[in-house]
Image (tube, rainbow, N blue to C red; front, side, top):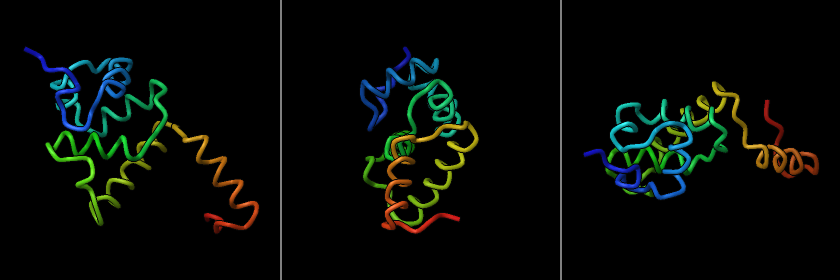
Length: 112
């Protein structure tokens, strides 16, 4: 019998709803797709990108708690997350506006 998305550690009802909108309805579907393809589908169907949500899903698929991600592993996941956002054209508009405002008043360095 298929298991719900919420059977995966770290994934609750909100993520299950987002995955359902992307056509991913079971834990088995999510495992079969893998974290990057599944998250890309979320972004393509309008889910707003959120790094913690991404790495919590990755950790959950490995059977690990969401806060088990640290150091080099977290940096590598951040690079994968940023690549997914770029590939799908997804943007965290709120964060981009905040960065622009902070940059304008000189609180953060400009990115190349």
